[in-house]
Every structure is written in C-alpha cells, then in structure tokens.
Image (cartoon, rainbow, N blue to C red; front, side, top):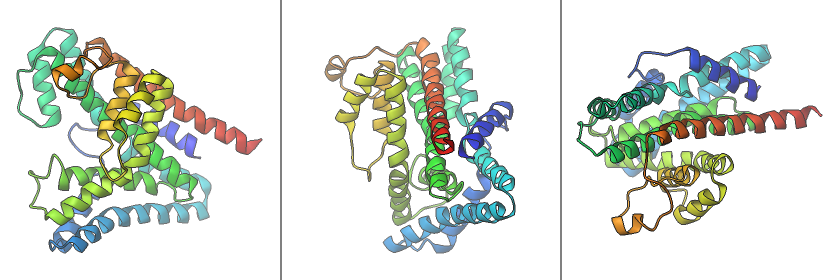
Length: 308
C-alpha cells in the first residue's frame, strides 16, 4: 500500500497545480497558531506543550482515521493515505518558481530571474552576480526538494512501517511549517512568539528531520558522486539536535560536484567542485527524480520480498 500510495500521489502532484502561494496545509497551520495563542505563556515547559499539541494532535487524528478506515476496508485506508500525502508531499511548492527562474535565465533575462527569486523567497530583490543567483536558487531548491518531497516520503514510509499510516507525513510537514513560522524565516511576520515556543519549534524540527535528512543524503550518494558525498558527509556530520540543512546541501555539493555552501575565498579554492552554472539547474532536477525513483525501487523490492 505504501508504494502505490506514493506512486499515485506523485501522479496527482504532476497533474494538479494549486494556486501559487496557498499552502495545502493551511488548516493544520491554523490549528497550530490557535494552540499557540491559547497556551503560549512564555515558560520553557509551555514551549514543548504547545509544539507537542500543535503537531501531535493532527498526527494522532491521521493515524486514528487510518485505523478506522482500515477496519472498514483497505481501499478506504489507501484513499486516506493518498489524500494526506497530496496535502503534505509534492513538487508543486517549489517547482513553479524554480521553472520560471530557469526559463528567465535561459532567455538571458537576469533581472526577471532576480525578481522571481525575491518573490519566491519573500526577500527584497538584490543585484547579485549571475553565479551567486544560481547558487542561491540551487540551494533553496535543494532544501525544498528535501523538505517537500524526499523528507515527507521517508517520514511516511517509516510511519507506515510502524503501523501509523500517514501520521509521519503529517508530523513532518507540520514540524517544518511551524519551525519556519515560529522559529525561522517567517517568525518576524507572524504574531509575537515566545522564545520558549520558538526554541521548541526549532529543536522539534531538527529532531524530526534528522532521519529523513540522512536518508536524503544517502540517496544523493547512491544516485550522484558516491565518494564525494560520503566525504562531505564525514566533514559536515552534526548531532541530530542541530539543523540538517548544511548536511543536505553538502551532500548535494558532492552529488553534483558543485560549490554551494558559503565559504571564505581561500577555503573555497581548496574545495573540489565547479561554480554553479545554468546546466546545474537541470542536473538538480535529475538528481531529485533519481532519488525518488531509487526510493520507489527499494519499496518495490521490499514488497516483492514480502510476497515471495
């Protein structure tokens, strides 16, 4: 069921293009904000209480609905898994702005590409050099591909293997969204958030993302330059309590033989890899799709092993 749910979700994702800028998990995000407004008293214990309820209750509901539908009919549980995955997994979050930027750069319109990037990231447009613009686009597309496709898929596979249905996908998506909204890039735009809740949201996301991030790194190693990825994995390995973003980007560096992480000029000259070029945008898309196919093949082999 896990394999076919992922396959069907990816097909739906390619066919369905929702309105840009409208999060599919808007209702769940609203639930989290309501919990925070009701319970955020600024104490450290309240931070974990708020985060736990905000991400735990929707995940629990997803699991209980899965159990109920499974008792009625397996196809109903399958449909529920697909519905949850459609809301939590997909290229649509970043593929449209990424494609638009790529087309603008291919046509030589760098001013439009910078404007599109600024809209995508919600930052003021800056007159970056072409190489820096390409680096930033690849960096953010890599992180989005991990957070919205590969990471969600790994979380769903793990929770399904544990009999929890799509609870893992819900937990992963909400942890990522609330980390951004309460303790990350969007924190200044939202209602005031106490330091306790912001810290809990960041740490909760780091712990939730630790296993999926390492699975993404391993996939990049298998489908990319294996030795380069492992070398960067050893160099940028970090505790699970810390952010995995640098590790994922370092793995993408090795897989694509690029230089993506910001470094001092003297250090950058010693790091193997090429400066970002236009063709690397297509190479990144290929890397992500090969990683997805690898995961589906492994699931297929696991299914065959159970059947025979």
